[in-house]
Image 1: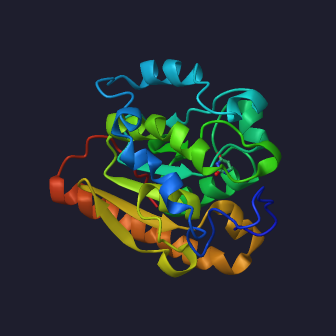
Image 2: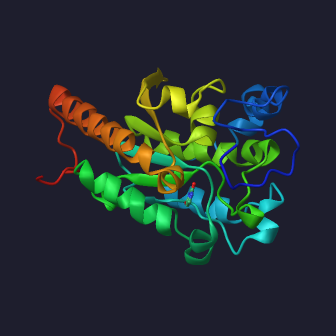
Length: 240
Ligand code: URA
């Protein structure tokens, strides 16, 4: 578990070391309940999805949150970044990554030549967990259809997993960010890059350089993808 975060469990459910023993089946409930996981199948309009998700009451998180933080950015982004869940500032503003960690993420994006509004930024859970705790597995499962639909509709080429919860939920529960950051996975013809959560880097200066390297790798892969396909659909990169 991330330092300084209180888990309501004696054994952390998610951690840098992977899942706590016995917790995997709970999370992967999402995978084994395809009807629920594909709740938004057939819905192809991101704004309609936003409206529907705003009404969601599928888990306890909505009760304690001001509102749903759906995510924001370019609806046709080639690059999507997925964090953990909204914090206090995000809950207040209704926007993802706008607090201290968000400013750091913006700087990381700029370092790689991306403007914030050229990518799409979302979270594993859309409502703020109380007292900044990690989302619980059943909350992740409840929220997963929303993220799955966002990814399907936006259809990014690359998903950047910010931190353990994101990587373990989207890619593989055995991922350890300390060991696996900087690695790429391919799933459903989409590339997934695992890197640190910005808040983890703010807590530990030593993680900054590796995270910068991960974003440089993202830039390189992105440029290669664009030049390979000669699409240039949207001028996502600015001159650096
Ligand atoms: N941390 C996250 O994981 N997401 C946010 O939106 C803000 C902080």
